[in-house]
Image 1: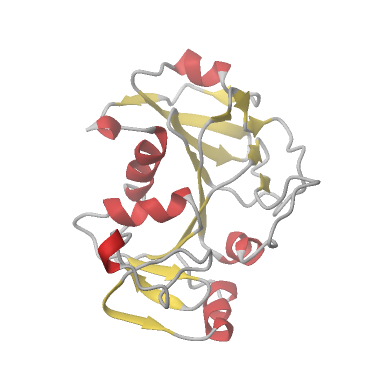
Image 2: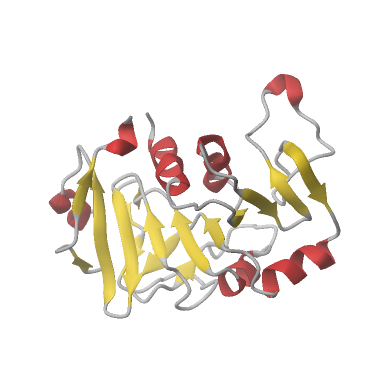
Length: 217
């Protein structure tokens, strides 16, 4: 199982029955494939609620896409509407959880996920609204970028939002953001607590850390 699948499977465990959940583009969209035994309403900020699993190549409808232009499926009872209503839902505090990828997160819960200076990007998208409007912000990302830590003492890239991250899920573990910093609450075997510490620039509180071997099943 590769790192992205491990992350998506673990993030799916955080979703509760009847949650309204926004999935960011990229890795977070994979979470839809691992929701089992719960009724979750997946939302895309371009105006969809009721997203289903990623379509296979034979069932792609390019008139049905998420905010990143990726083809999606719509479950029975799903709906689409304009961006005005979609962002009214987001800004009105009706989204229970938003799941986003990131370039960097720091120990204050700051998030940098929209630009690397000097590189062309289409824009910030809905991330700024989602992280301030959703009740819980979950970051789903690989722990490092080619061995370079992405969980830092302080973000060095332009911020998307300050102090809005609640939970970070990587292939190595689950980290909760609290007032006193970052708490490692799970580590994913075969990684050890020390492995997670070594791959993290920010200080980690580890007294709550428990091994979770369910991730790889």
